[in-house]
Length: 204
Image (cartoon, one colour):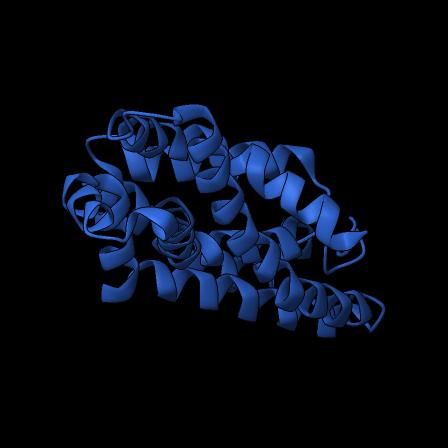
């Protein structure tokens, strides 16, 4: 049940940011475009579905943390904010983001794949880079509440801005710095992490 809801939620959050890459890939397909794009999309979603396994373990663990004294939940929230923020500033984040922001080179790579497995491999490859680009943002849902609709909307907007806006790299760094700031501020204002301090839903 968690994996089904998780995959649906990731599809909704990632759709605005991945439409441009999917449209560009579709232009490279001459015949049987619709069924091949279905394979591409399914492969992409399978990557996020697989990511739901560690997400489930994390959600279960953080759910237990939320049942601990408020100070423990606050400490866990600070760690979540800090880890997410630091990753936003790493070269690996930049590399993954570059693949999503400049997909022309990636399309040339996809063209070299064997035709029979091209759509499956291309979808999985793109999904892997999206996961590498966005996992740190998804972990913030643990702090804000996995089923927090407003958090989902804001994070989806951030992901879209990172990938499509001209200043996407600046947005990524700004979010990283803000997340590190939250790691400090949550000790004074625990309500900043309702999913872990008793004010929201930490797990599904």
